[in-house]
Length: 256
Image 1 (cartoon, one colour):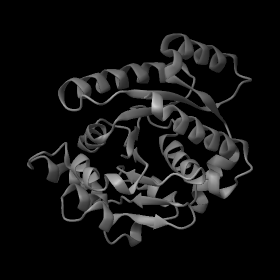
Image 2 (spheres, rainbow, N blue to C red):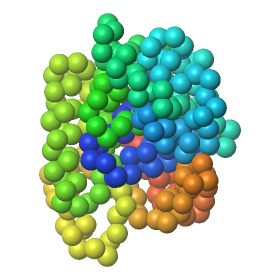
Image 3 (cartoon, rainbow, N blue to C red):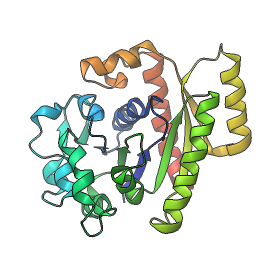
């Protein structure tokens, strides 16, 4: 059975897509069969996985409208070693089209149920807003991985996200829970970041992943080459941290 995780945070600019593509590449490196689902109409996770969103014949849009299966719509990224269910501008229209449809928040879940045996991990890159697309991701997932910077405003955003997850858990998906918090763009020289990191550990305990992703130029450069940092420069500190994170996630699975 595939483990399905949303990579989500309602605050923008926290490295959600960077975390999603690099975790996918890290999991592929440690021998896992991975599907990355891009639920953001901007298609950044698609482009960052070596797949050209402008060339997509079928996308996550077709899967949500039930005109294609995941097997038909997913593309294997040779460079990255994992499958991508891509997104492009068409997806923005899905918001409006889904409103009048039955089971509108369950479309992705139903599609993933059919493809369950093909993958070990499914990672869903959600848009930063709480939309019908994000809701589809949360309804399909076993849990949420929250990438966050160790800054004050990030703590406020986390409170909103926890409340959203509680609501979805209570009303739509009783399996949904926070799997863990991933500290990203971390700079140990900044005292505030160390303090917020300690607060997170004190409050959330073992829900905070041991792996910390450092602030890293190579991770920031990689998307302009259409690759995750893990593939673009495997020797970079940030890339190595994501491979370590992938190993930690695999080890945690039996305890989840």
